[in-house]
Image 1 (cartoon, rainbow, N blue to C red):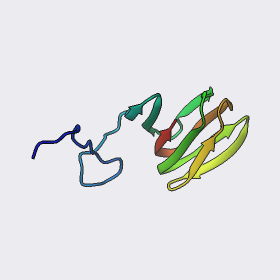
Image 2 (image 1 turned 90 degrees about the vertical axis):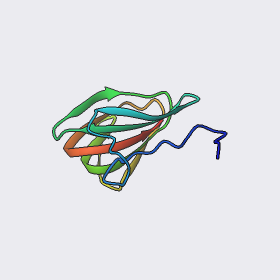
Image 3 (image 1 turned 30 degrees about the horizontal axis):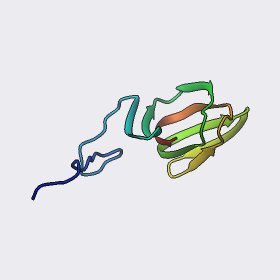
Image 4 (image 1 turned 135 degrees about the horizontal axis):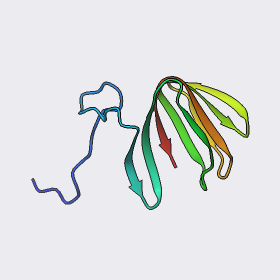
Length: 105
């Protein structure tokens, strides 16, 4: 059977049956019309300095524990949690345990 669309892309972000995405710092899984899905890994103690995005950002924690600060107000997030950061809001990240996250922006 001939496909009329590109083939499926698959991989594992945790411990699934597909090939592992690996330990790279950041991997753009999807980039469509300016919207991105990004997989990121962080080591314990790693930080992401204060920055902002021009769109709302949805962060979901796949593994680990981290603190996301928006305008110096901390929110702790662990595996299974999500955080929505409003467009333009200054925010930073501090990794308390090795973590894997997905970012939708």
